[in-house]
Image (cartoon, rainbow, N blue to C red; front, top):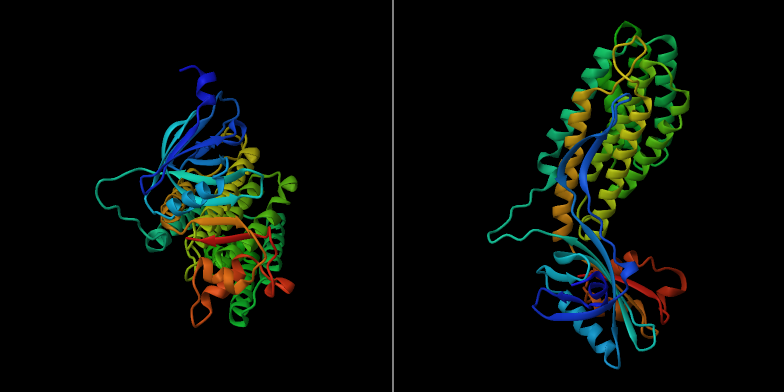
Length: 410
């Protein structure tokens, strides 16, 4: 079949309940993201790129398709019911071929005339005849992440003999990190502990002229502590990403090998804390796939930025007195920690609840819509969930207007 014939074909979706839907689609709106967990190492004076490829991150496809005709609403409703089945879909795409995947987000829009639009994000999955075991990343993640922290401490203690300028830089970075992190703490006990860790880190930095080996643990404990704040994953990540950006802002002033090693160690400790936060959710934070995927994106973005920064700092080789190359063992262990966390989070995302989005067909209220999507419970937990996920406030507590975007999970 020629490519012209392929793109004119309809897309076929076989949902988990076995029903087959032939749908119209827009070619320009359907793109696949084929990605792996990789680390790229580029060496000056050496042609090409060294790529360390590990576990598959999962292929994501954003799809947009349409039901058309007098019965478009009935088709959309039937598809919505089929989408509730938890078994994987088989999508026969005119360009990408057959894809076995799970939906993580489905959005329905019937505001058009004679047309119902469906927007779906699917993640490709493998199929197994037997049962699969998915490990909670909280079970083994501490050991994996701690290994990267330990290798960070070991390389820093062995490679850095701070000068007066280096000590000033380390103290300035610690102060910036503390100011950024302390502003988000609401618990007094945690705030006190964080302040104590900051003071211990500053003390360790002040005596680092005599060798950093004895004080490096105090510095690492301080930098990693925001990952343990009694906050949501997103709140902790927001703090840590802000701290990472604070360090990034110092890049243009970094010139000496010691300064580069200090940056590698301190920024690397923040990245380790980001990984720790991602695999330590509270209660049911990872109840839906969209939230899990958003955390994965943050972890990978911050890690990739860090690798690019180290590449910009490194010198052609490590033979000169003023040369700098990132520490191999630390980079290896940190890469493994990222891959471990992300691969497990993808498994969690595939089993979590899927997001659904509709636009209100008529005016309504939060009681009716909560009952419609979740059912009402005596403790009002479903009502509070509906209000929270849709950010309902003000006059909307009394009335939801026609056309209002509504998010719910199945």
